[in-house]
Image (cartoon, rainbow, N blue to C red; front, side, top):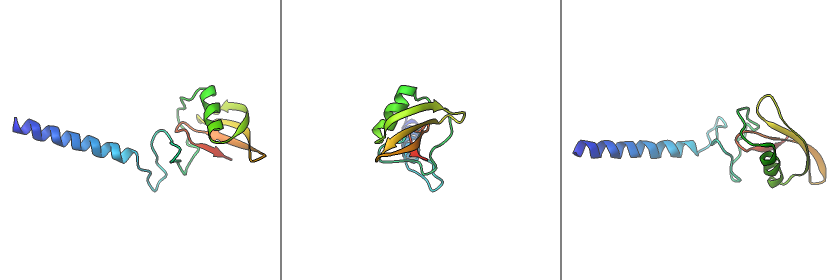
Length: 104
């Protein structure tokens, strides 16, 4: 029974350590699978399988402060591309699978 308790404690510790490691950006630009308002991957936009629908992509871009989102298309790298307005200027914007919104 004592060995089972020790094994369970070790497993819980390993799982907790792994979950913390997944939420901390690294120097290589790795970030969690989903960007938050407080984090953005410096290497964005990141290519990958994008699960955002067109409506969700538009909403996420608008939540980032862009208006008049037009021509929203999912490219061959899995990145949503569009043109939009911000601060009175027309810009190209991208939304990657992590949720990073970037102007290009």
